[in-house]
Each structure stands twice: as C-alpha cells, then as structure tokens.
Image 1: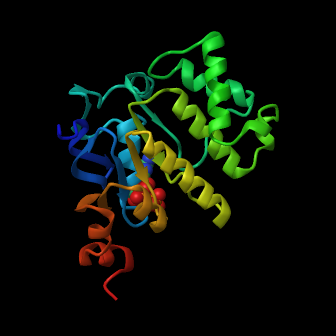
Image 2: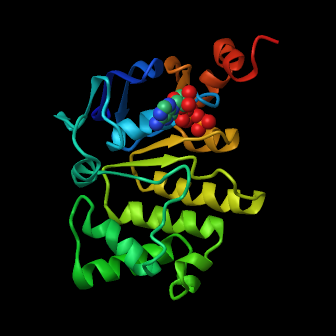
Length: 243
Ligand SMILES: Nc1ncnc2c1ncn2[C@@H]1O[C@H](COP(=O)(O)OP(=O)(O)OP(=O)(O)O)[C@@H](O)[C@H]1O
C-alpha cells in the first residue's frame, strides 16, 4: 500500500500582531484524505493559523505549501482558486443573495471555476446535501444559525477544495443539531476529503479526527491521535491549568 501523500505543509509559521506572537514557529503536515484537528485552549492561535492558511493574513515568517506550491503570501482569492476553501468561526453568508446564489459564488470563485447551469445544478445538489432542501427559496436572512452554517459549508464545498478548513463549525449548536453536524462532517470524512478542523467539542474531535495538532500560546505542544493527545499531561494542563 502506498503511504498517504502529504497535501499541505506548514513550516515554521509565525504570525506577530505588534508585540504579540499569535502563532509561533508552527510546523505540521496534512495528508491527503486526512481529517486533522487543530485544537487548544482559547486564544492559543488556532483561528490565526486558519487565517494564515486561507490567506486572510500573510505570515510574519514561515511558509505554507500545497502540492509543493508555496501559497503563503498569496491573497485569499488566489488561495481559494488553488484549492483551499473555508468556513468562518463567525458565520459569513451573503445576505443580499439567495441560498443558491450564495453557493454559486463558492463555485464561481472556487478551485474549478464553475458557472452557469452547471453551477446552479451543483448548488442545488449541495444545498440538498447539507440539509437545506426545504429552505432553498427562503431569504438567507430568515435562516436559523445552524442553517446559515449549513449554507456556508455548501458554499465552501462548491469550491471543490482539495483542503477544507472548518473553523468551529459545530460551535453554538444545540445537542440535536450537534449530532446532525457531526454526522455531516463524518460523511465528508468517509468520502475521503482532506479537512482541517478547529474544534472545542471533544466528542467531535474524538469521532472525526484522524490526528490532532495541539496549540498553546501560539506553539505546537502535542501531535498525535485524539486519544493520545487528549491524555497527554501537557495538553490537559494547557486546557485545565496547573490546578
Ligand atoms: N487581527 C488580530 N490583531 C491582533 N491580535 C489578534 C488578531 N487576531 C488574533 N489576535 C490575537 O492572537 C491570539 C490568538 O488568537 P486566535 O483567535 O488565533 O486564538 P484561538 O485559538 O482561535 O482562540 P479561540 O479558541 O478563542 O477562537 C489572541 O491573543 C488574539 O487576541
């Protein structure tokens, strides 16, 4: 069996905001078809790392590459084109557009640049896929929080990304919605997608992630299977403090 191929490489990544080092010399790989959890306590630098990968910010130092092509330093739209799509910690849907148009935007500006009837068809399929079939004709502004998250996921998938970034996609859901959300991400995992997941929901981390990288104060403090990292004393200390 051929070993899994490295798709995304993060090397010595550092991001400073003035005197604050939000991400400090982070190095990790993501293999093709892998679901990698990026976890750590609040303020540890996870979202900043996602923002660096998606091109929202440029790194202070270090590189990010995919398929051996250096992406760090490129603007966000070029990184999306190269095959990285994301959802946001604070949902960002386009309120002036219909649900279908929101997803078409993902297809048009995504990796494969789909447009016209093909994009409309794809948008409908994805809206059904994420469970929005009965809401397709509603205004975006009438969607519940989880449905906005579903829409954002459909838009990210419409970009046909090689790497999908989910930043706390499960946050703020009630217990039933959470089970639905985990099932949806689990389906994406089963179809072999490559995903980086920033998450605080431990059940989700345990059931969805092949591997986790743990951050604390901007630095990687552990890496391994969810079971291994979540029983690592340094990780437990980072989450719970010395007491
Ligand atoms: N644009 C910014 N300007 C200045 N400081 C920032 C900026 N973005 C993040 N930070 C700071 O960088 C540090 C890391 O923040 P980040 O949001 O990456 O952490 P996180 O691990 O995602 O936290 P959480 O789990 O609470 O979302 C924090 O101290 C934060 O205040």
